[in-house]
Amino acid sequence: MTVLPDEGFPLAAEFPDPTREQWQRLVEGVLRKAGAADATGPAAEAALATELQDGLATGPLYTADDAPGAAGYPGFAPFVRGGRPEGTAAAGWDVRQRHAHPDPRQANEAVLADLENGVTSLWLTAGPAGIPVDGLAAALDGVYLDLAPVVLDAGADFEPAARELLRLYDERGLAPRAALGNLGADPLGTLARTGGDTGLDGALAAAADLAALCADGRPGLRALTVDALPYHEAGGSAAEELGCSLATGVAYLRTLTAAGLTVDQACGQLEFRYAATADQFLTIAKLRAARRLWARVAEVSGAGAEGAAQRQHAVTSTVMMTRRDPWVNMLRTTVACLGAGVGGADAVTVLPFDEAAGLPDAFARRVARNTSSVLLEESHLARVIDPAGGSWYVERLTEELAHAAWAWFQELERAGGHAAALRAGLVAERLAATWARRSADLATRREPVTGVSEFPNLGEQPLRREPAPAAPGGGLPRVRRDEAYEALRARSDAHLASTGARPRVFLAALGPAAAHTGRATFAANLFQAGGIEPVHDPATVDAASAAEAFARSGAAVACLCSSDKLYAEQAEAVAAALKSAGAQRVFLAGKPAGEQREAFLRAGVDAFVFAGGDAVAVLSSVLDSMGVA
Image (cartoon, rainbow, N blue to C red; front, side):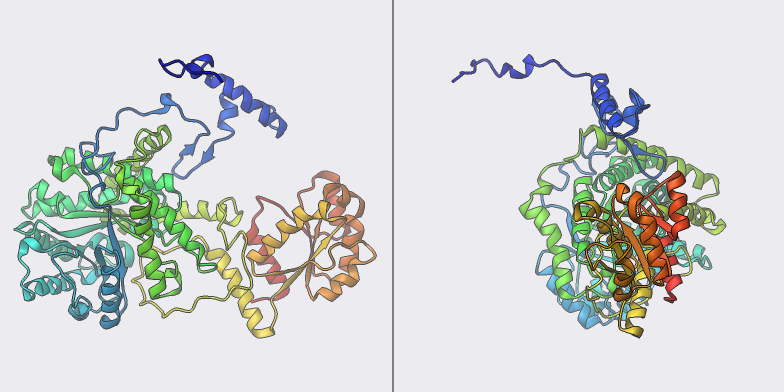
């Protein structure tokens, strides 16, 4: 046995430090095997990069050379590493649950259950979209308002909702200094949601009055929310979400200081709300970049250190939530919650997995609150201050995202400010263009949605939930990643309800399983994403048996599945046989080129399905050809 010397472990010193150029040469070898022989040096490295939105990209390798510079210390400008020196290490982040049940008594039952089982603050949707304003007292019956902060979200009804909560504080004998939470005024967010700007000046004045009231002896109570969710939920990118939040925050600073508040007081009246997605690194970088950007705004405005530290509320994204296979939403929200916690959010709301189906049930709310509890109590996630600090990738992504967001913020300011940009349609046009590009990635499954565009389950039973009150509309749209596929599945469901069977596709597999399994699995997955049931019986066919097997399948269309070699030998004859048996359309799983492709088309193949193709267009055309409305 070799005994290591007492002075240390010299093993690492025996290996020379590799260079980036050496690593790139190894990458070149891999790419050559994949057919990319022209990629050398930096180009080989760039070939492995992953494109993000906002013109950003994730590289395959990061080193100390990629670090953008010092990010400061937690709790100190520019607050990249956190708004407080201790981060959330002392007590974890604020676990904030959302409630919107229109029956105040049922809302109260859910509120008390949450507070008894790990939730530390309440986010109440009030007004027509949630709890009636005059029902707030009943919804908060039995709640210790000096212990549980209440955050209101009442849209255009923010002033009566705020006055009702303040009345409730007085009625229960709560000292002004003991009031905790946020009154939820957000006139520009309401403008974004509804598109109606009548009364905007009056709403801003009312928000300023509430801010002055809170600043006068109510240190635990804020008046305004800078809600970036309308921009995220309209399909905006991370940088666009950040830029819109900055423009909104600046507009509120102007309003509040014009009403007589100091810059520090005005900053102290704002809480920023951001979306947390299942892209954990982008979520981490977004929250870190948001603090840096706001610190710059506060610095230029003359705020002190306390005012420059942005207060953040992160909410798991509704855009990523799916209506089909909703159980997967538990995984998405867990990753999003992790990203929000690591990113330094002060408060985190995990939306229940059945959020897209209507009002959540008790089980879904329990899973939502326990998501934070597991990360805090069992994974000890909050015990490390800024866990991502020092990661070359996260630091570089934070830097690049901050610059992209600042450029969009400046464009909004040049347009006359956020209200003017909303009225002129600048914001809507930019977000729509971003969502169109992302929709193309979703349609081609370059951005897969598990349980929807990938690995769907046609036999699942839909969740049944009580419908949620209608959210305000008329302004920016609300989008979801699953919406194109959901429309296809709804057509299939309607066909099932009216005929007793789903539309079907016959998988004409050629040769042994080793030859056809890969493409048959691909094709089955693709067609099920559109609600089209694959029939793979018998396991393999040829030109002599294909017509009879197709007739037994009850399908209207067919798809050939096999290897390129067997396609060359059998595909033309099998395609012709399927056409003669009445197949409305014949597909081939693969992407042949040149003369072979033309030969397949002449034999009866109508189209080709392959990775990277427009799945939504193909599936829609199939349902159209079957007469599925």
